[in-house]
Length: 286
Image (spheres, rainbow, N blue to C red):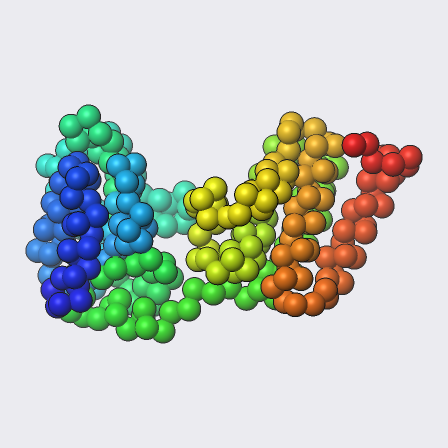
């Protein structure tokens, strides 16, 4: 480890000093990875951000050009089974990440979730590095060079276009009576469009989604966001949540862009309103 990487290690070690089981798993895994040939090692998530507590995961990112995934996965299972009882482990093919291995370990009376992402190609390294990322070993500079050029900032104009048309998709699901899917789509639009705009306006990490918003957002925004959750899976409640989602986005978009150019959003909102009025020609019930 160079001095910077050594300081990163000390920072993590200090943050988990009193978290016995977490520290035990972290140090054993790190020692194992350090013994692998030509291996770059990093961590992300709460260990990197310093927001670690006894419920935190351990998120390793490992880069190695000299090993193949089947070879690495068998080594991982063998090594990790020596640390604690493996309650369950699997790869994350369900989220299209077959190179991410997820372990649930029992150590003493604690359950530790351990994520290990194995990268074998520098072209996919950048996509795996979040804003909160610490390098622990990187003699091949697989991480160092990518971090310097990485900008994890979405195109807000594209995000605005996506959000606008997603509203129509949400409405279609509500109109068809697909209420569970509609509620899930509202969640998706909130996390992937509305929250990044709010976070940008507040000067926060943009792509952290719902993480710690109860602490980071002003109470007034939290109160408004609660209204984007339907009280029940019923047509009226979902429509109310949808229009509240639109209202909050409009206000935050105007604040972000310093203008009220919302033609696309307004056009789609008006179309949805007309469809709702067919059901409720005498006014939308409160």
